[in-house]
Length: 438
Image (cartoon, rainbow, N blue to C red; front, side, top):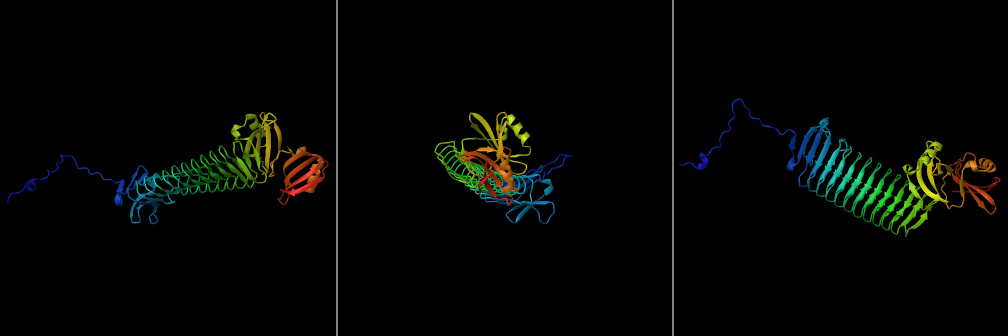
């Protein structure tokens, strides 16, 4: 029988010269998981790369082997690495609706790229960089100071614990800072942004946003668009941004500003300050102690050096709460609200040269400008004696001197020994005219 060409063809043998050996290189650092999921460790960086399908990727510390870090694809296939050799983790979803979970026991930095698809991403216990990218993603930062970005699409992002930076980017997003001092930016479209606990910086970005501060002293900017902004609890600085906004300071002592557009400003409870310096603004429902003015709000860095030096010298240990500048009778003055070392709220007024013009308590009653603010040193001796006799153990707040038809009246706001806020009114001779609750 005649042999075919293929039966007669043979692959030439590989000849190795004398003195040389055949080297076969192993892929020790790279391990293939099901459906081409790849996990590799290189110079301390554990990299996990998913597929274009819907992956379920979990990274955690082994519960059975001490010091072992496991990579799971789904609930079945598992590859392990020495945890001490892993200094950071990078996970790429590579498309598909992925579920990526890093266990809270993992505290090394983690970077996650969801890539395309509607992904669910949960960070570990360290400082993570979590990116949903395109798609309607759900991101939870968990513990650590995390950087969370929803990317394009309608995303839900929760920073979790600690101080997080959260961006919704494009799409209708739902952002929640969680605990910690968070920075949340809704980005484009109509977003729902909440600071939750602690002192947060929140901005709605463009679009018709709902922004709420939650607990803590928050700094809130609705951004462009017709926004609904609420400071909630805490001493907040709240502004609507451009557009026709509804701005509510919420509880406590807030600074409220509408900016451009036809805004509706509401103080809520507490001693609030309204800055109605734009056209078409409407302020309503002001609580006890609210004031409205065209003053400029400043920081300590904005003050002239003589003012800073004078304040620090005269009020050492004071905790500044708010600073304003105003023009009074053609003279620029600086009003510094602060807590003294006894925890009593005070206001010092200084000129640009650092001269103390007045200092006294900043009470919670309406500031109608009818009286002159003075200190206890300015009270007549008869008034001081009468007050100390009538209300022993009280803490004085704000004092005003006002001229009425029957003569000069001294109005003293104070907290009595039972911690009840009151106001007493005395004549210059020390006669108690009236006392009421504040």
